[in-house]
Amino acid sequence: MHRVFLFFLVISSFISKAQVKGDYLWVGGYQSNPEGGQKGYMMDFLRNKGEPAYVKIPQGFADNNASICDENGYLLFYFNGCAVMNRFHHVMPNGDSINAGIWFDLYWKDCKYGYPGPQDVLILPDTRNESGYYIFHNTNLYYPQIRDSNQLNFSYVDMTLDGGNGDVIIKNKSYYPRILKMYSYFTAIKHENTIDWWVIKPVVNDSIFLVFSLNENGINIHSMQNTHQFFDESRSSSSGTAKFSPDGKKLALYNYYDQLHIYDFDRSTGLISSHQKVEIYPPDSIDRSLINLSSVEWSPNSRFIYCSSSVDLYQVDTWEDDIQNGVKYIDSYNGTLDPFPTRLFLMAQGPDCKIYMTPKNGSYSLHVINKPDELGTDCDFVQNAIKLPNSNSGTLPNFPRFRVDEEKKCDPSITSLFGETVFYRKDIEVFPNPSNGIFKIKIPELHQHGILSITNIEGKLCFQKNINWTVYEEVDISTLPSGRYNIEFYPDDNKEKIYYGKQVIKL
Image (cartoon, rainbow, N blue to C red; front, side, top):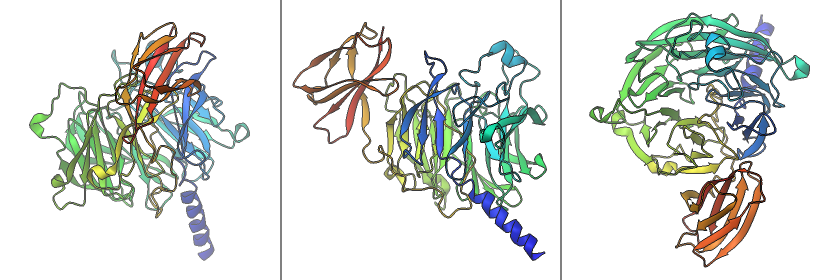
């Protein structure tokens, strides 16, 4: 009996520790490659400090995005809502046609840009098979309504197949009947036993959390619990996110219209309790006619909650006796175009203890909260802090809350190149745009010495020169292929750490 118990403890410990680096590699990108496939990027926190690098991927990411690494932080596979791709960036055997059906065949048809709609996918390890992985996904409800829309499905990957690169052996299997669930609030966390998983999905036009358990019997509905807030279909659904705290004791749900909701969570029983509503905005100031996409994320120390609502970023200090007094304004969207408005949107905590934020469009940059464990503006929120090698589509990977049972919730030793030397971006005047390759650039009057560079969308340097005492500078890239290029000017006298940028089109 004692040997059996000891064996169980050893296996439990191995399975738990095997996933502490499950979120160490992020994949994204949404741009056609003339040579076929899509222009993507990877953020590898283990080998490249999270610095974005160009990678050619077979299919892009419209919105849905999930990935999973092994216990050493090496990529196993990733998922864009309708295709599963292995670590070598090939679609897995049987890995296509995820979420396929009548709606997809009639109204989308092509998976090259991923599955559309809100970020609503998750990848979780099988609780009793270290080589198996569940992919949670669901079809979207669009009008005209199609009978196969709006159901909760899963697919299953066996990593022992295809020479260890994985094969999808179960596809599009329903685990819960059709229901009007609330999009984009899909989240998960380990059970207190460190083996099983809790999966949470709110219901729309109601006040219910669906609580699922992933255990040795597969995926099962565990309970239906009160959210203490009626979430309506027109504004609540798709407009926010939900996240467990890194210590596993709290659940936060936020959108601009319904505001912030905080709950206690019992990882042993799956009980959601002790509801608190926090008003980020005065109730009479909420404009329900706006399309205001939102996101929520926790600080690694589980003290602060960050709430982003397209224009504004707030921090909530949960250690305040009266939590309403803990609401602190951090910053507002600064108006930068890259080349589209880089409004604040989706947040995700990285394994490097920073919080990353993507705008909701095809921009080329990410925002970063560099020190999320610090109070107020000391959190060091920097807009357009990271330059991507190509266009993102307003998505970041959706991970369960890893490392909840680890003493260290993240690794501050992962110091990226952009961590302390980040530059703030401002627009620069370039004309004509588009052009045949000859562009005139207006150099900022306060900065007449510096370096002017032009890179292609893959980040490759195409042109560079030193600028000295000039108002307008003309560059000629007419010999380069047609496409999009990034013009950037870095001043020499630059205590403010500002660079000026503009994306141009060469006809």
